Image (cartoon, rainbow, N blue to C red):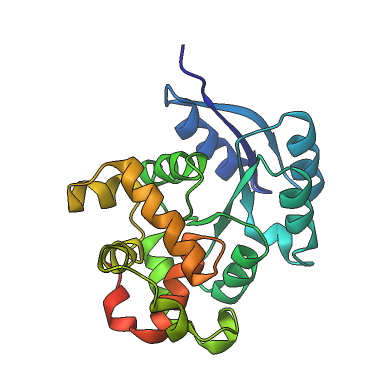
Length: 221
């Protein structure tokens, strides 16, 4: 029997939260193990329910990102997927650098919702394509690591450059593998090398750093 992806849902709007839960529980490989409406609920479920993915309303972090960092540091197993509205790009960038693994627009459909959960469960990052495009357009020297991006790219192989350009479009390892006719395992190995060479923590930061050098190569669809 395949182990299901354990998910916790935290959003202060009951109707929205219930809609998310209905969509997730309709999937045979996903189980909603807890729900809540506050940061305190999120921290409690991380400790007691031990979900693989916690879906968290971004507006609950208005008072600061310390709670987000506390969850990711104390409960490393839980991957944080944020719900947000377009227009919170600055906070999204900060949250991704403080430990969140993904961000989903509240206007996303059920299919994207499920895809994002599955992607995070595979220890990958996910950002809604339209939001990722905005992040790339807004990215600048103050939004990425201070090391010079150009120096980092010198170690990338041609294949890694190719994968990075597709990764910047918000594609998962499986989608990149299908496009390049490579196995998902091979892509995962290349992505790990890319993150190490660029000295970044996740796929989104890699795309942001890459956009510093050649933004036209990382245009999102």
